[in-house]
Image (cartoon, rainbow, N blue to C red; front, top):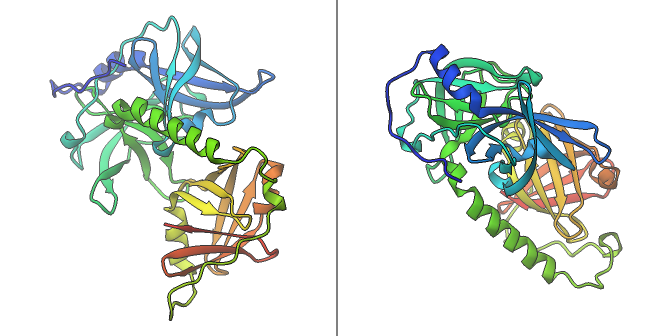
Length: 337
């Protein structure tokens, strides 16, 4: 990967920026085993025969294609940083210019930005806006770029550029329940994807090796005894705005099911989620809705093997551990945020 960090140059107007950077933006199409299209997104060229997109664009895919105007290539996944939702593709024969990446430290709230992608499949679409916020975590690290540049489904994996034509982010999320709340992951993270992907693969192999070959199916295991809480700790139910704010911004958590199996949950502000069984590697996308008045979170799963999770839950907290209990069955799972 040869994408590098460049220094600021002369500001471009929107037409100049589009002419220079749009050759680096390609549509990503994802197919199932029968060749049917199941996903559509955008991607950005970052090096010779290499592109970056969002991992969620590739979800459930068996094959990948990229295209721009009348040119198309097959592609394959080479590095995946699922936690940050960045995946790198290799497309043999791709001849397209790589973008330059702006340093994260150079970003300023209020600066003009441009998004180029394929919203709803409309190839090579340009929109503009402002960098409206730099979202930070508890350690004051920038973890997300907020912008008023409009994006739509299909824009995921597209480029967010500054006025010098440098890539500052990969667009991945819009809030459908609000106005001008659109988000991108920092482009500077792209250079870290190969190393983080290798580490995730190493962890995966270590966890898989730790599972006994003759282990009984998860459903045959009895539920573990609940862990004791510190004296005086009381369960507290989350309702209303607190419930909505907590679950909507949950992100990635490792949850424990009644069988003791770990579930990897990715919760997105768009109302989408996905769940992976850490032992069987079974996977399912899904959706959730929050009912603040009744204090419930309701989950719908696409994979029938995850139908046990398809129910409504009440969420409680005690001693820093959160428990989601079904309102209609004995099922529950817990996690620490």
